[in-house]
Image (cartoon, rainbow, N blue to C red; front, side, top):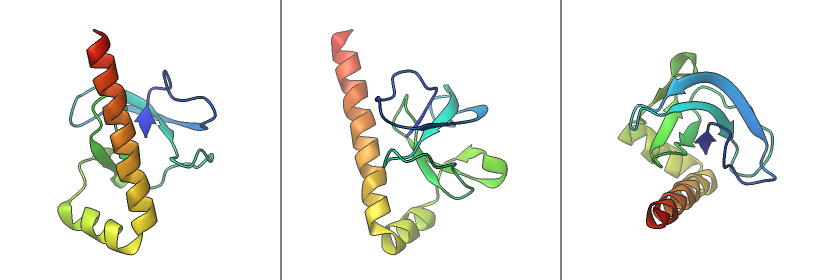
Length: 105
């Protein structure tokens, strides 16, 4: 998951990176949280989920957030099915959080 650092579940280690905007919702992102809760610095090619819109993104060249390609997503699902399942779970959890938040307003 990627977030600004506010509202991320307790117990998850956060990695601060250069602030940048989600290419989908344009919200500023400056923190990443590894799905397992381990403290892991993201690397070029890693996938993430925007904390504000649940869009699946990828760290591209120079660690810029970009939309993943279909081929890239398919290759990730084939080569790393458990990690792909974790990515989808993170997307689902963020989506559920956004739905609950919208229902409260």
